[in-house]
Amino acid sequence: MVRRVLQLFYKEVRGLHQAAYILAMFAFGSQMLALIRDRMLAHTFGAGAELDLYYAAFRIPDLLFVLFASVLSVYVLLPFVSKATRDEDAKAGAHILSQMYTLFVIVYILVAVFVAVIAPYVLPKMFPGFAGEDLNTLVLLTRILLLQPFFLGLSSLAGVVTQLSHRFVLYAISPLIYNLGIIIGVIVFYPWLGLYGLAVGVVIGAGGHLFIQLPFLANNQWRFSLVSNISSQAIIKVMSVALPRALTLSINQILLLVFASFASVMTIGSVSVFQFAYNVQSVPLAIIGMSYSVAAFPVLADLLSRNKLEEFSLHVTTALRHIIFWSVPIVALVIVLRAQIIRVLLGSGSFNWDDTRLTAAVLAIFIISLVAQAAILLLVRAFYAGGRTLVPLLITLIGVSCSVISSWLLWNSYQNIPSFQTSIDSIGRLSEVAGTEVLVLPIGFTIGMLVQFFLMLIVFSKTFSVSMRFLYRQLFQSIAAATVGGITAYVTLAFVVSGINQETFIGIFLQGFIAGLFGLVGIGLSYAAVGSIELREMYKAFHTKIFKTDVIAPQQDVL
Image 1: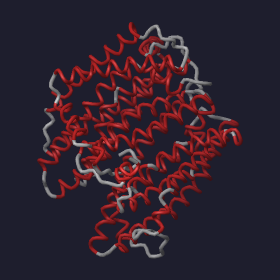
Image 2 (image 1 turned 60 degrees about the vertical axis):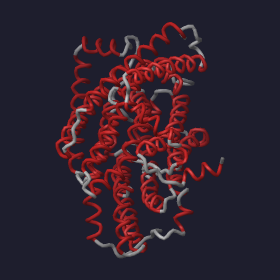
Image 3 (image 1 turned 180 degrees about the horizontal axis):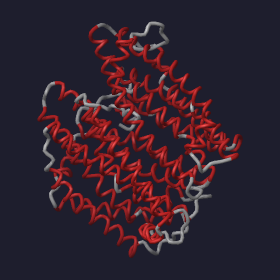
Image 4 (image 1 turned 45 degrees about the vertical axis):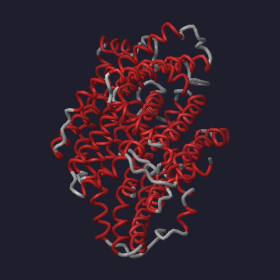
């Protein structure tokens, strides 16, 4: 049994659905550990000032991470290294990695030192809600967390080698190590160092993300090291591909930074509530959107390189159909079961019932954009496969601008129009809960994601001449299944499991689990009743003995 599991880790998946489901298992494991991490943070701090500082301190380091790690990404460097190896030898491929390694170390150290120096002057303007001792804590936390992008950037570079060598399990378990480090920070270092102990745990996790790959890297033919001869021509070629991608990722991080800035001047705990809900909605996004987009990318790039446009269109539309197939019903179930989900995942210790209700309302708004977010991940990679990196950048810029503008307008309306505030409270069923102004942020986020999705779908359809008529059938079937599943779950909550004790963890878990299970049965029966093609394709994917296929580990990034 153990041998079969090890063989599974070291093999390669060819089929789209088999690859997507295997990748989903990797993503599921990582996301479950992330939820354990968040539950421990919620239990220890609740949605309060300390956790607001902790999450705000991540914003600049995370922005630096996506800027640098996207340049060092497998998707950027692997084609260059593969070509150099194919045209010359492995030493030529290793030299490309060594040049990027040298450049990254020099540039990142300079940037990190600069950010650490100016942090006391920049952070008060970025997060006006923090002052005095809180601001000093934020500055020191940010400085400690600047080590995180350094380790994760090097890990991305090491990931090129492990995937070139088909040792995918090493990269697949790295995100697990990262989250484990944060958990150690909560358990071990927080009682000793206070809030700074959490930052130490993050750095340990990021270091583990890298160090687990180093033993294999040490004796590999593509191992890299510091070099003195850097070819400007080679760097320019890499940057021409990487820069638009890095900017696209950084724009999304800037959006989160702006939202954290908004939340810092709202009710205490708003940053934490926003981040908790965002993390929870990222679980189905990672399992569905990332899995299909990562599984599809190598195939799409290969098909376009051979000018097989019909097969390219078929793969994109197939992946889109399955994303909608999974995502729409999940939206309905999460909206119905939002309180149970948040209470089970986060509701203990200092995280009280008001925190639960507010976070659940934010989650319900976030999850509306799940289909759009998952489809965007796929469409962006389809553009990348065709070498069109500028289009996603421009569309992302438009979508993020819509998110920021709409959030700002909604926030001003909330502050100045009492009837609007009452409406927001009513929508979230939060009339007696403080801090409901945070709801304007996920509303703005959702508006921006929907704009981005529709624009990207239109441009993609015209650029690659791909018909999107299939969306009507798929949306109709998925909305019908989601409606049945949502109603079934709601009725189960109201009439079947309403008597279960909701004051205990087991009671809330059983209530949500039973209602969710009935909802899933309703969804499955609905899909079967309308003759869903996707249901048959899913059955075939599992029926072909998925656990005997090979696997490619996912790259840890967003786009």
